[in-house]
Image 1: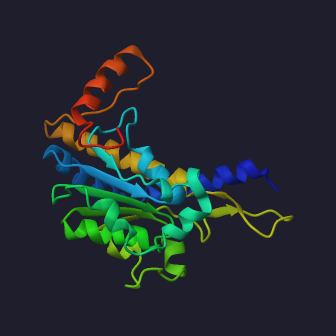
Image 2 (image 1 turned 45 degrees about the horizontal axis):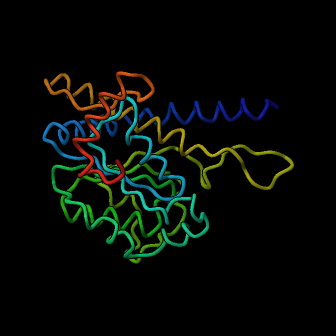
Length: 245
């Protein structure tokens, strides 16, 4: 049998290829983002548990758009209390308090990441954003989501609430590598595939905007002299609109 790291690489390669076959979804998500930014709209983004890394992936990132507002909540992330975050993400009503300060409109896009797509927080967040007529894009594990019951009173799952969803092509439980000595799989794939899909959408949206004569504001790498100067100007411009800046 091949070494585990090679089997993992193959698993990632297979899922990347499959994920990028969602051409229509990638192009539509990119168009929505391009249209939004061209009209001075915002990209809102959020995720809980490890999925919060998808929100970080496109925020304040070298080569990333400036007009991104992540909805971070420390109680839903892992550095404060990992097990506690799992409890909170299942509570209905919590999302409403988090989203209420933001003036979301029909010009905006909301990107949500949830591997399972079954927990109340992400579903509530999508429903609240839809009330304000924002377009909802989600990245989820369709196979897992269809297997596990919803934890929301509506019975809905995130992919059913979203206007557009992309499948990260994962397995039930996320991990993919089996070993004889273990009764559990190892090697999660959702972060790798989700990040690749997100960046692909952003790259495509950039190309669309440039073809239409619009140049989006983009962060430079902060680890060179030019980057510090350019990024400081964007931070000063948007710090009152983006709390996390």
